Length: 388
Image (tube, rainbow, N blue to C red):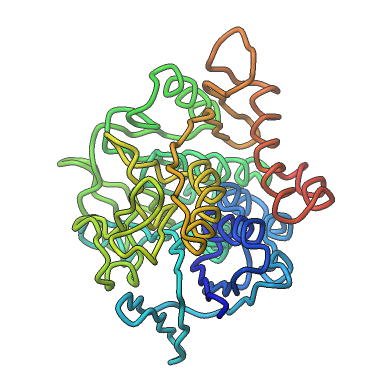
């Protein structure tokens, strides 16, 4: 009897897992791919849509086009995962059975209980989110003037916050729009807990882009008009974008699978098995054991993990021992508008391990193009190149 393998999510983890499974299984099992959206989004380039929404056509790809002939795609929102029954409950009332399950449906934004933040902020976890940020920034700029510029606040100066602030600045400059941009980070530096040289280069690029950087005090409260930072600072805003953290999605929180109590991300061993040997988890949905610390919630880690999870599901079906995965950091690439910073990029010889300029920009484009090539082929990668 043919086994049924179900994959949840169409981000890097889910999409990569489907491609890996198709390579490994070779018809040994039926694959069902479930996602609440019909496309795969190159999420680490979604901030480009804040500047120019037409970029969406270059960074979204239909799941049915990606899926091979042995994979059935189902668009649906997962409400519950029932490991005891080996079923997935969807929002439309339907149920999908599985023999083996791969949970790769990503994460949602964490608001950390900050009063008013969830109610009044935009987020950046989907294509619709990026397009909404564009529209809100454009409308705020339309109603503003040089004497009374629109106030845009970006909360969180990690990857998403930095890159989003850079794209808002590019939108402002391209349209000569009256916009003030404030980037708020509770810790002492942008790109916190990372190399000080990288932090300094990013800080300088943001300053050059005329972004007001505010570090060292956390957002404590938000209402309809004001962001309250620390004890004394009040920022009136027209648009508030929050990029400050992630937590598990509700279906992960609702399942009986072992998970982190605070983040509701599913615990997985280094072979991606959870406490249920028929359920595998990876990407932002999981805390994948890597020894002292779990794998980071990055696109790079999800890509690498996806290559191995398909092999391990196939090995489980065949009764073979599983491979342990070890994350390998191949470097960091961050854009600030059309500029970029590169750090410790594997295989690249440079005067400094941290650098900017045309080489960093080309490397940033190259990573996106390589993934698009894997998902949709070289023509799609070439079309996307100018907008990355």
